[in-house]
Image 1 (tube, rainbow over the protein chains, first blue to last red):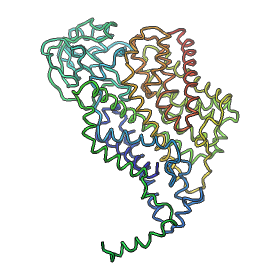
Image 2 (cartoon, chains in turn brown, green; image 1 turned 60 degrees about the vertical axis):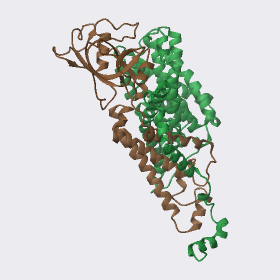
Image 3 (spheres, rainbow over the protein chains, first blue to last red; image 1 turned 30 degrees about the vertical axis):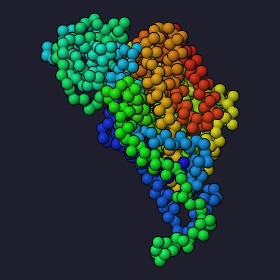
Image 4 (cartoon, rainbow over the protein chains, first blue to last red; image 1 turned 60 degrees about the horizontal axis):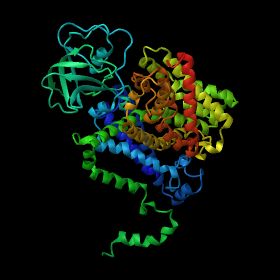
Length: 261
Length: 354
């Protein structure tokens, strides 16, 4: 591959990182704390590409044709601008002479994915793939929940308490949760994906929904549900998934960060 | 045609001189033209691409959608680390003379290997960062066994990884210790094995080519050019690895984990294979391992020790950096050594399967 092509790919890739990190869609892929690193990486890529492009332009704009010839001819003795590239495989004038440079084309894939497809956050499909992993048992006791009103709670927190809480902090409480719908075998679940670093390590926190008005909930539609834990429903047999007796369900807007952590 | 057009006359008059000039690349189909055509085709096919992952169009679309999200996620997660790695690597190339490294490291490889393992504690990154750094160390005259020890140790024993492991296993305080020991043993063991049995010719020539000691004054240009070259090259392999990981993520059923139950032997084998195919970031894999609720600790430890040492993304990058003939020997051997280290340390620390 020519050096110029590599520069353009690097420029595009840096641009793709800047697009997702500054435009906010990075939240579909990584956790929020990654944003500064993505921005820095994007700027560094763009910067390195621009430096290289400018140096190539300055180098090729040199007036003397014999200087140009020297640049391609003698190794290391040539123009200062040219010889640094010699321990890489993409130095000028030798396109395709090295077998491994083809892999550089792979850099185009994330660029196309980001600019053309913009993959959405993980949804119901991932929830239904994610069998065999349960919500984590936290250290220590669960903190007591406030008063008698409706409590807003994360799906993963609800799932953990439903599965592991022996002190009954959820018993008799009305809770409100936001999540998306994942149907399995005709039964609706309320789910959120939980990520540690990026979407590759995501696992599903889910709650089985039971009650009236639950027909026609479509996969990946965001809803807000109010309901009560049915105690003792999380067992090893069902992968520690609790059942929520639904009192009310209504459509909701997707949150800015689709994942819980 | 207007024969009096002066521009046209000039260009015709110049034509016979062409053989004396350096080859004019503009007239050939080069990678630049290919890139332009690819971009145009991709833009034209945009709607078709988008329809591939459209919602409500069946299981295939849902699978492609999940895989594409995971692919972009692995790239977005790993690229900043790769950038960090190439910046460190380029700094070594531009600012650290070989003589300085010779002073720091013991002369005998057998002694330098544990030093390199301990040095891994200082690079808080994932495996993508350590590959370019390890290559640069070799080019700076560091023995391959020593550089490879660093390559294996850095992603697995740094404080960020150990702390995140402690957070993921709040009820098993011995897990971070076991992971640290298992990974360090893997790295140092591989270093010693390579020092004893490794052959220089397995490593691609390009990875060993000594860097010339550059003259003063142009170091920042060396830095920028080295970083750019490493990034373009290693980035391609990183993306390849991310693609493989994303495909495997949707092809390998996660139900493997639930089917394991509490069978330790089966658990160890499957978790070791999963560590390779899932290619998780070493700062997050502990959370994935912790969520496999039916398994004892030993298979989870195997997952955590094998993952940062051998995974599809890392093997792709190693093959690209050090050559295929290196990767074909190094990766399987590392897998075995990591597996044995994890089992040994696990039995010792947990006093059993855990």
